[in-house]
Amino acid sequence: MRACLVLALACCLLAAGGEARAQARSSSVSYDIYTGGLQILELDAAISLDAGSYDLSAKLRTRGFMSTLFPWEQANRVAGTTTAPFPAPLRFEQRGVFRGKERSVEIAYRDGRIAELAVAPVGGDDNDREQVPLDDVAGALDPLTGIVALLLRLEAGGSCDGRYDGFDGRRRFTMELVDRGNETIEVPGARGGPGPARVCDFVYRQTAGYARRVSWGPDRQREPREGRFWIGDPRQVVPGVALTRLPLRMEVENSYGRMLAHLRPEAPR
Image 1 (cartoon, rainbow, N blue to C red):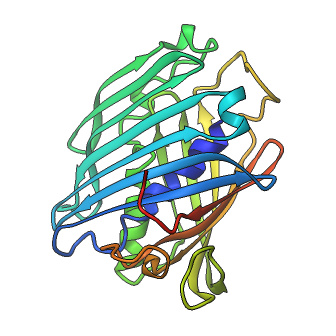
Image 2 (cartoon, rainbow, N blue to C red):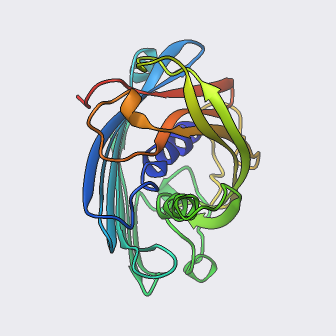
């Protein structure tokens, strides 16, 4: 499930890059996420950007056989400012239900640093998870803002190349990205055939906050998760979207192969 979340959050937030310093814009998009040819997850994202702030939300849920085996849903939201040279979060929230149990994270920031943290369940009740001292993550970014920062750099004419330290309320991690240039790809539902996309590779590494008891599957917490996303013009798939740059396709490793996400050619349900 960790790989699902990495992929889905990245899909949602990469959408923020295109017009963050322009006039106020809002868009809603959806992604379908597959493994082994079967849909296992869906993501609905709502993005609001203006000249000085960003507000992004992502709703995720399992689908198909995965929803029967592992019923899961989660809502993520971050609000912050873009007036400084680097995006600064103000508040990050994550609320979800896994196997009938509620889970939540609330992080408040002050001057770009973590000021308050509330997590439920706490580490001892969360598979005996190691606690991460706040002194170790005071300047870390939430999972969403870090990718916003990288995409703003793309908007300014930079490359995908970059790295940041993150903290999602339970786990400390790093994200590293490498620019692979441009490529022509096909996207289901796209009008006009194959189109150009910017290719960015990434590696996600968890560095602290490990669960001492893994409830399902092999323990791969210390293994890097590699992936790739293709950024292009979403209007060829979803007419009327206000943003001009958005992930059209994304792949990430999981314990049993690779997951693939496609931009859905219709409005969110």
